[in-house]
Length: 628
Image 1 (cartoon, rainbow, N blue to C red):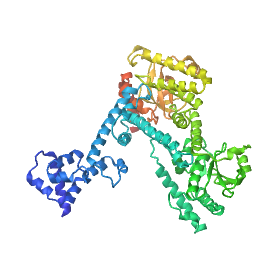
Image 2: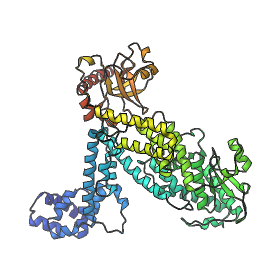
Image 3: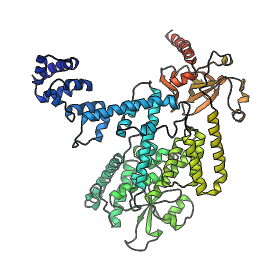
Image 4: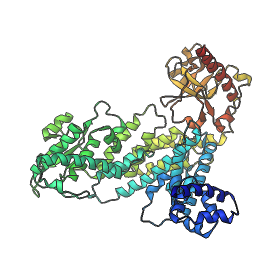
């Protein structure tokens, strides 16, 4: 009977939403239903926010049911933006109608800004002041982030340009927040020893689009601790570690009891869960990210040591980090409390080597050299993080394929957040900005940033005068070149000088010699690179040399290349090109080719028609052959 009443009312509610003056009989039928039934109907999910607004204006009974802090508007908010509900406490009073309005407005503003980015920054990397519109928006930042995530999660192969800029904006917003948190963390006193927290900040900064939180990582570690306790219980059911509660910082003093914990840890980590040092792929940045160490169950000495240290301390074993050269270690004190200790009063633990316990002599054998006693000393959180970021910095310098140098940029940011007066790194950062050409279109904000960096270097170390002067000169030359630049260059296929150009932007190609797949995003009637590049790339050895069309292509491996026409051919089995900059130039992938976005089409206005003809000729003919 109740179900029948609900079905009947479900038919009445939309009618009420459509009519400005509903009939009294229909309205009376609806409002006479029990409040729980009415609330159920209004929360069923078939009514949009505008419907709820209209229904609530029909009479006092429905208006009371649709009060701004009630269940109806809460359900509207939850259905529309489910990922935001985790930010609200069940006990908090929330004006859900007002939250809905603010979130809706934030979404519209975020989309407006994303839509403007391609027009503003197509010819340049997004400059340092490019995100000022987002920073100046009013309203909770989580609402803007949520809208950006919604854009990124749009289904299909469309809206590629929107997704490209939404990703950049989200990357920036999250990194700024994480960097501020890290700086606040670094202000903690030296005895604040949350090594895991610091490592998670580094992980988050380098992976801002991933859902990484200290809470989740700690929960995973807690589950490992539970397994260790289970093993420990089988050895010593009265072990004091078994009585520790989550969050306690108690320590066990007896060496034998500590040894039982470490034995149980080694069994669980290395035998049961199969954690191991990553010797096969040592120079991989994933080895330094704690969430990846837990997922992949592998890492390098410093990340494995931090995991080992965190588990041991939760179980009452006071291990300490040792910034040992070439191989990070932990130390375990064997001496009496309060006694004068030297390096021989410790056992050193190699978490990378399955928890092996080493003497001083064995530590030196591990790295193949004798070291001073000072290198066996304990280090604080900041020094541990410095070494982690230093490892990332070294990996960033080795980058070859990723032409955005994202890891190098991120690790430089992190290192300079900890040590802002490092002259060599400031110089590297200035050179990197200059190399990437991240210049704004209408102002020279970043130019000034580079000059500020160089001035700061000069103050710190006058001996760097030569390097600073060189960069200043080239920065100022860039300013002059920008002043002389004219508008957008338009290339027409119908122009006589372009008669030899055979391919068009958006076509999926294959390199005849190297076999890589790529998509064309630009072309020149002849090679426009300098003599040095032409010589280094041995262009003169090509049958047509540099007097042939050359194409800018995005390659599936993430690189950008400049390929001669004679080296390219149509890809008879076109596929998406997984390049991070695809969205910068194209709005959609059709299955056979990419459609240029508005900015790229302005530069090549006649290419799209040629693409359609080519696709029709190449792929339709192939389909007919298959059908036959």
